Length: 213
Image (cartoon, helix red, strand yellow):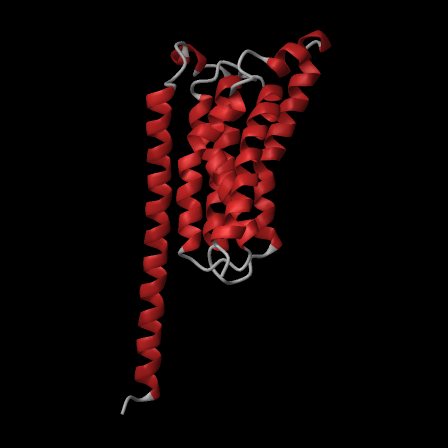
């Protein structure tokens, strides 16, 4: 007959094995999402012609700070939401980091630039296509994240799907930023945000349908 101590050890080992398997599955999903986004970006767009010179400008690099922070705050939250355990509001609050950085960038830009330049900065050259290209690059990552949620046990599938869309948007926007020739923080706050929002809405709907249990 198995003793209580032995049973506890078996259960603990099983829990650790499941934990490791869960972590590996999400690591693979995230890696696959980044690779897929990179392939779509390379095949369809590619970097802007002047990326070498642009990389030395603060406005260009600030785009990657914002999109990178968005992805890096959304991805851990997504993995946490994939579990059945409740996620605290403090963890969710980290999602405000990227919007806060962007708001500061917009405020500084509006303070130093003449009001006559605000409309051209907002509209830019790529506004008609920007949100849709971010969605195109982030579509496969979103599908991978939602599929991973389907195989997990999120207690709040709609919220998990929204965060999946935000994470996919952060990945997609990070790649698109290398192609986009509009570097204004005001442009990013408007059109990049629209693209991410579209993915978040799609993720919320998909999460509610696919990841419900």
